[in-house]
Length: 299
Image (cartoon, rainbow, N blue to C red; front, side, top):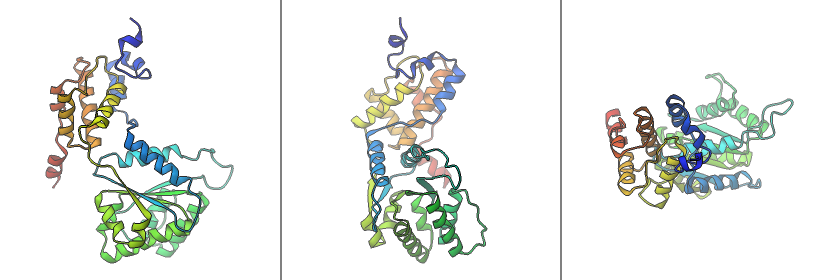
């Protein structure tokens, strides 16, 4: 029988890998991959819109809000990689960075925030440099590298500062957007939304895009179908069977990153044991601690 009937449960591009040995298939299973789903594609489209928005005094912003490990960073990373300077390196002068991604430092103040920007631009700075100097350097470099959109990940870290630091940082965000006339994309938990809403002018500019926990619906079943089709197991696993789907979702507590981690761990086991299909028992026995229990242990 031909390859196509043999591995009908796999995507055509994945089928050739199913004949590889166990070690290389396990490596493939564990490699990070982009798993597209409707909500993620919608956010990517919204980010594309922002990127091509004509410069004006008040640029629109976007706030990607959701629980930890629910796919936020994965989406902005995908977007950033899509826009790595497409035109190749310019002959001289700085490289172009259309999408700049920084992390809001914890215990944040303006100096640390501009430090994080300089860091992301590959420009180390002295810890003792004055804030004004860092601010100048950050803005100058962002102009030179033609940053068109700034992503601020872990925006909820803003709340770990004092009330005064929070006010000042929110002012800095507003100022930066106006000064460079670029859209800002905030990424964080529901706390981030609270931080932005405490500043009336910013609240009007940031459009919230929630990435809620997953429930057992069509969209979730489609996600499982996609996962099953890209993992090179030789036999189908029927992840969308109601009992199986429910078991995965409950172990993952509705968190996207956990759904993917559980399925990947079980797939590795399926290859190691030679069973070549994910059984409900493997989901339970994937050496998996639920996110809530893990948080309890951490505390």
